Length: 225
Image (cartoon, rainbow, N blue to C red; front, top):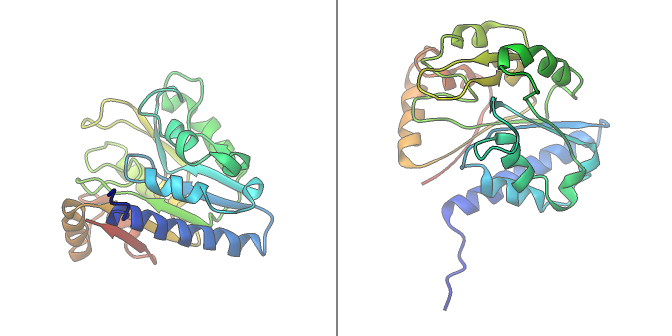
């Protein structure tokens, strides 16, 4: 007999999808468009699948990313590809997706165009969903990035990022732009991430653990083992 019980991470993904769908419906009841900012990586995949199954007015929903590797959208490690393959499926294909890359060779060259795209979206976002790495980074705000101070302080919507610990150049929404949302959710899994979050909550200093830049605002934490 096959065990069809969902795993804790699958249950968490469905709970997060319910919360995000409810937020989008609430905002669309009083405004024409609603913006959802999502993160990449492997953790959000079951959440994307669950949210795509919700009955929403997808044609009025805009989706963009918290950050992106500066790679072709067809690359295996493209966050845009992940969103297209797991979230923008079925009725959700009607959503307007705004990627963070251009045809330029570098994120420094493409940042202005990406910033212009973002300015046309329905800010404040209904929801920003953040992830977190074992080093305390969120979006592409890495503790070893030479652009971290700029990304934490600038009023510009995006920042080009070079990080010694990661092979590809990246582009990230600035902390100011990520803060520009009605709701923030942190979606993480594993005991190691829980330990990092506990350390972040126990101290201060966003340069050491950049996730701390978002702990002072209301933050819904979605965690599973």
